Length: 446
Image 1 (cartoon, rainbow, N blue to C red):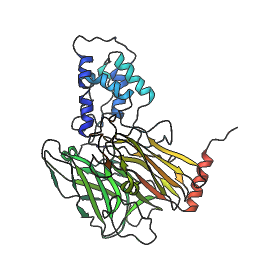
Image 2 (cartoon, one colour; image 1 turned 90 degrees about the vertical axis):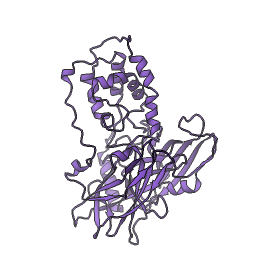
Image 3 (spheres, rainbow, N blue to C red; image 1 turned 180 degrees about the vertical axis):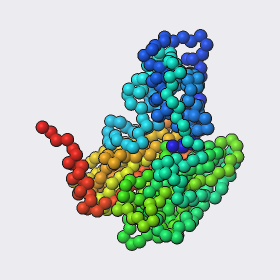
Image 4 (cartoon, rainbow, N blue to C red; image 1 turned 135 degrees about the vertical axis):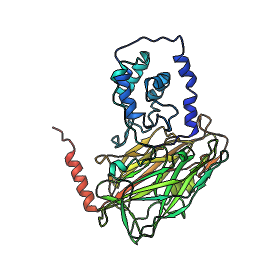
């Protein structure tokens, strides 16, 4: 997926450059080992987990495509993977759901392989036997076009914006008609700024404005007057794919409200944001309608208050009025964000931890997409409990000023918390059937 990293994350890598130079400079010798080599053992790990971002023209601060490119960074790579900073996957692996469609974290065995390779002196191995290089797609292509076998059926573009070379963060919030003259069901969406614009696009949140029929579930509204949350572009996410027999309803006369957050990078850049939409065939109506929610945003807007020098905990509670399947979990906070969990308080009082991001990093807004089998299916009356921790102390290296009180706001130096979650509401009958099928698949004791 295409991602745009903030300057803070880049500085983290640059700050380690001297360590890499010192450890790999002239006169340094390492013991050689045939046990682990770059060509046989390291390249497959890099191809699967790293090169999507760490290649020419992408947001990674260095390319990791060849041995000559990787070798100087070997000590830094060792540190990053040991600390599980890279690849970005900040979910606590000891609690909650652990099966995800997009899990890009390294296994313990892969981390051990990288550590042993670096400790052995980063031997190249036989470079004539390297795996076939991945033919990465052009950066201006729609990444989900291959999945659907075609370009988007509809592209909605924001109007252009020019971000100055220097200055404070800016927001550009145009409202654009979709041009739809009939209701259509969406099966997938992808958001992308222009290629050059990804350098200045902090994130882009998109809202759907349309009339809803009485009885429709009211989705959570992120910002009053903007509409219902639809999707976003952020570091770690490019869009949404909806499961079989589900979709989002986009009505005739609907509008897309863009909320583009820009930051200056030292040169003037003009950009826009595009929303690519893939529809189900005309006339097809999926069984389930998916609603996008920003869980906790209303509570955060009215109650978030973080004293100087403190680590705080805030809670939000969201009741489910109907049975529902949760499709993903994407926590959102700003630079003081420390951790966020999502629990389900079931009608019988049982508390079930769903997902906990223990090491939130504002530079990476990772969307954790549950698998078909792991997506939690919850009964009506369940209360979703969002817990958010913020660190406004001097111990937080990202904190710009631990002496300031902080409240809710859209600037990166303000704070917020919510979880972007797609919900598929179910009938009572479907809920009972899904639960029965899940129980039938559970292993039985002797």
